[in-house]
Length: 109
Image (cartoon, rainbow, N blue to C red; front, side):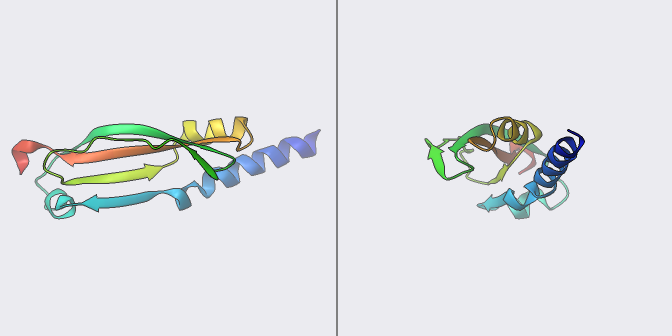
């Protein structure tokens, strides 16, 4: 019983440690130049969840996350703790990924 507990803890720690391998950041338009000049404030414009079956093998639909009219944004796709928890509970049968769109406030452009 003790071996199973330690194996489960090791599995969860490994999943958390390697979750950064699944993170992506994509800059769209002039977001990187505008947001990194030191005077721009950024905020979360939209957020969504993408669902997969069998560890990401089969996507369940396609998440449509809105983007700002200016087109300048950052799209971040990653696993949150909740996403990893659901993956662990369902033994990777159902996995989720969080898609977040960050934008620059209008008055700082």
